[in-house]
Length: 288
Image (cartoon, rainbow, N blue to C red; front, side, top):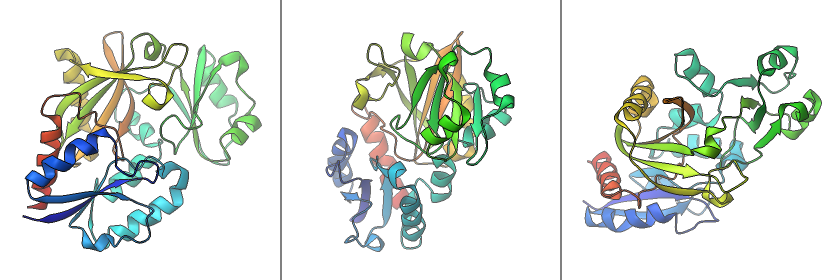
């Protein structure tokens, strides 16, 4: 088997993240000819690849319309993973409202659509909150994500301006993110692979490594893993995907879902023994 595969990255990371560097020799050993490709590189003929796997395209949210057009164009000439319908569903954080309606516990959230005013209905919902997180509905790596004391929350007009007139979320701040960290449960082909505990830097709330956060291998308790697996099993997009990262916070011995990452999550393959091999095997299996 000598199957050409594109692992999608962005111009700021042409060689991919550490996880991709671990994957390349493993894929080569399986007869998969994989290489890192910038999704915005117009010289690339994506029709020449048997499989296009999104990995570290960490600028997609800065070019949302262009990214959507690229996805729709590329899926006409190659197999894209995760599936384009799943990526588009996951790209707007309003999917969390759908999951909440299914009974999955998320951080208490006000979903504010573009052109909608953050009005008394929302204020009534958040009146008991101490701190709030404001973030765009289309965002990654904590881009344009803010934390405010409730008493200092900007006005409706100021919030709309801060979010550029786009859809946005106002969420209750979960203090356990700072005191305990956020757990990432990684799934490969719908099956649990490993977990990572991410902690923010001192006096910060962002767990991403580019903001000073840290990540370490984490062994969840049987009950927490059972909860994570139940969430994953309840969402068909997780079961149907090559990869997923389920980000959650433990509060009162229960999980609060923060995000389902189905587009370009860091999978921390280097932290867990056998994780890179499992992912390489899953990719090769999709080519058979």
